[in-house]
Image (cartoon, rainbow over all chains, first blue to last red; front, side):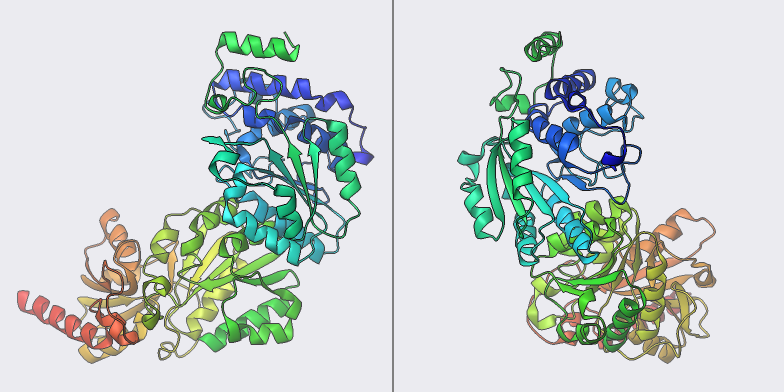
Length: 274
Length: 304
């Protein structure tokens, strides 16, 4: 477990460096889905840096806390963390999506560190709930964190599992909603209005709170504060799609846009990395 | 067969500490035994089949194996993508039981009838598919499924047909259940169609085989002795037993056989009626099957 190994330094999961890695992968691969990775960078930084108990030497250690990325479209952010942990290599980053390489553009469960095959939305949360139920059956103190997109919460299967988690009082379950306000084709408020998410989760039987999803300290404090509650938890993380690069922020066309040399250099400059 | 299924579920959950049963609010008295012997091993997840398959995947991650029960119209049909991604993609050794397959729920109409489950699942990697005809085959299939390291599907059709086998077959596969002297012909049936096929075969002196496993398709060399196979299944022509036999014959030059399908036709329920009526809408009621097979054999004999 993390506590038994050399401590991780904050800089290992420093958001700027994680975003740089995402940009590097996306530029090398000429792929899309950058902004939905950028909106969960601080969440992952807080989780891997301070909240999750895991084994650096073995991502599949059965004693780990589980982190389920249900919104598989943001997987580059998770790969950036894997890169810091040594779970993926420079080759994986430099030749991302190349022929014969390991990593796909969405989460695949056979990759150590990825818990689920995601990208088809509404799958990860029910699996996370199943993990939480299993851990409860076994009397384990391990925890389950599941990052879902706000747009993903259009899916009925998500709400089926939210009902189940509340009925079974799965207090080991922590749902983190990446509430960036966008889904594939526009603003969630214009397509399927989800608000008030906090009230919805509360009325479903969750302990629910909100945080600034780009302040690592705030995320950590909120999750730690919820820990003692005898209910499943949800943290609505208010985030910005494309956070960190001004021309990507809240600009949904970047969901589908690839970097060219100019935009890559400009994005790196904004992050302070070039 | 239903009593046997109930008993098998109760015995397995008693025997294996980490084996649980999930149902999406279906099954009712089927689970009386397991609820009595291992109440904590039975979870009714509510009317939420999609999430149920996800729970099975999550439970497996922490060492809990599951049997997922539903009516075939819902499990697997409603939850195909969950089976594909949450189970098959990770080779999760869950056992899916799809009950009431075919037109068992004749009076309930199209929502509860299921002609396409085998076809849909056969196209997925990492899944074994069983279609037992009686309590003996069910036991053999269930026992094999419990030993697998990947996903499996057990299709339960009309469960009150007469027993076919005198005892448990050694393995799931292609098993001869009746021997006839007209060696050119053979009835090859699966699930609910085996008992009626056996009756017809005995009447017209034709050998009858039961196919209890459809994926991976078992060794079928025993059928090579026959040149005209009549496939019987309460399933669509597309993707089930007829397809599996045709695929073998088309790709293996050592075969010299032709298959004629007797199966559910390419339409939904039209009028309401009992089980035999529903089968008759597809021209495979017991009576129609006998008439059609008799006519087919007569025609083939006259062509010689």
